[in-house]
Structures are given as structure tokens and as C-alpha cells.
Length: 167
Image (cartoon, rainbow, N blue to C red; front, side, top):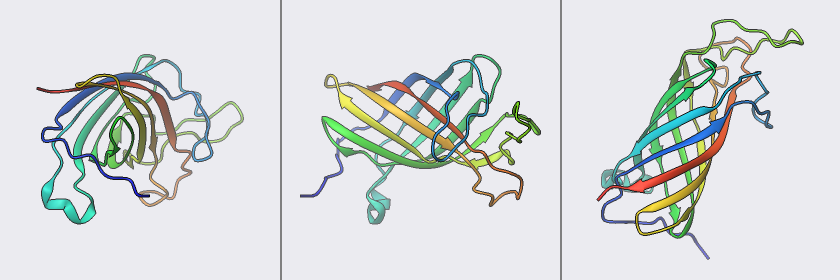
């Protein structure tokens, strides 16, 4: 049994949501970030010319932190797998405004090491109506020590998004 990638004739959509950076996961440590992230973005139509990798959709994402912690902008490609209930993996590149040098209370460095970061993402969604979806999202920012040899704690953002398909 395989999963099919949904192919709506028009997939342009906008989304917004809220997320938290104040978490530790297996791939990132809690950096002590405070506040709420307000996220907003756009996903375009699937790219037929990239059928050899499953016709991904281009996306842009902005995330603004309410307490002045790290805000970022990202762009990349996403794939919708499923229809009424779906997964949406994505990979992109992000730029952020996080601190150049920052330390946690235990003395460990928590800065991200580079202004340019990879931005893998995973959303799990459910269709609420013909034009509206609800997604749980996870975004991970990291340079994987490729852009810098400086410690790389990464930054995870977990939240919820409301997605509206454009007419």
C-alpha cells in the first residue's frame, strides 16, 4: 500500500499560526527562547518540471518572535502526501536574526553559528473544509556544522497553523 501525493489543480495557499521555540527535542536543545512565534507563509502550485522528485510546491515562511528571541524567514520546497489527512515534509534555507554569541545558564553556547541555516520541516494536517486545513508543524533550524565549526544547538519550533487555499 503506497501513499499518493495529492494533485489539486490549484494549490496556492496561505497559512498562519503560532509556535513555540522554548522546547528541547532529540535534534535541538532548549535555547531559553521566550515568547510566541507568529508564523505566516505562502505555498505555490506544484512544480511539474520537478516531477522526478515528486512535483514539490515552493514555499516561503516567516516567523516573528514576540519576545525578541530568534525570528527567521525561510524558502524551499514541500511535498503534500495524502489528502484529507496528510503529511507535508519540506526542506528549505533560512536566514535568522538570532544572537551572534549567547550562553545558557549552564555556560553552554546557544547561538546558531551561522546566519544561513537549513530548515527541514514536517507538518501533519487535516482538511477541515474544501478550502481550510489545520496543521501541526515542526521546523528545525540548523547548519549541521557545514557553514561553521561553532557549536550548533539548532532551534526547533513546534506549533499549529491554519491553512487557507486561495480561490
